[in-house]
Image 1: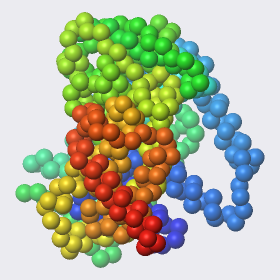
Image 2: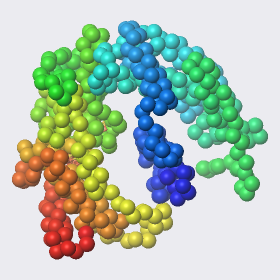
Image 3: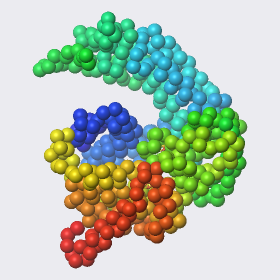
Length: 224
Length: 252
Ligand code: SF4
Ligand code: FES
């Protein structure tokens, strides 16, 4: 939490030496660690103190979450197909690597979305997991994550596809200057893309958060 | 490459464990030890055998979660972590024994997964600073001598893997605790809590059931971060000084 009560600073910006040593791996690490376990613990911990009374495990919201999670886990176990989770993880990784790296194009992204949808179908019909949910089962844990990655990977491609300009690490090969630099389109894309999850199998909805600059004017960064 | 594996299989912390034989086939020489296990696990899944449960996370030697004892040595041959060990280190056809880290304070949870939360509790007992470390320019306003900075850095290299305790015949975690105490105690930001820290951490270490140091140096030999055992002596001196102060009723 920052020195403004209730305002949490998480991810790359959460450290005091921001800008001094938050480069590359340490910034990525912060994003990963915060996303994976720091956020769920700190925010949960903060929120539980905000209601004025103890929320116990009999709360209907808790029971519903538990039921849904159990059903999700059981669904993974019940597929009983032929392919281990590792093979799906690797195949998805290769799709993202090939089509959704720093340089991406509308053509490649469209192809990737198709491939991921197909892979997701296969995942939910042909995954093979041994063992249940009654003890440590890393394959099960990984299957849950790969199921998420399949959703998220598609969204990443969709996000990259809808942003029809180049911008920072998002280099759309169709949009470059004659000497190969990223070509932004501030007129149409001066917004943050937030995506609203619409439930499994449905396309997420784009919510635009406009970027309004009052004091500074966005300019083109040049390393030359 | 092909290997014969003898792997510790244990259903849960209450069950007895045994060594089971498996064959690892078609392993690229450049696969890491954990990638080799991934390949084996895929083939076990194909044969309806429950995959070997092992811990890993970063797979690049920084998180300290890959706690495997390979051929009797925590993290196996070589100076790195298990995830940084490559199969080319072995000979084709070798028999490799894979066990969990063994120490009383690290109960086996399943196969080669152990519970290392004792280390977390030791950290909670003092392995932190409560001083705000300041913003970027402040780093230059507190001069720290090169000797101190280097020493603190050597100690800060500890990744908390637990190999030291697993290698020690006494199951002692002194190398780990001394690394944390040294790293924080040497730097100005950590100074205010020096006494409280060393007392808290050492007491928690004892409470968790880790043994004492009797100078085997097995810890230093397996530490993937190269933490020198000399820090243990430094911690003992710091601990003695802090206990004396505590007895004398001086604030710690
Ligand atoms: S001192 Fe070395 S062996 Fe012990 S926990 Fe730290 S890195 Fe691991
Ligand atoms: S998996 Fe992180 S150190 Fe080995």
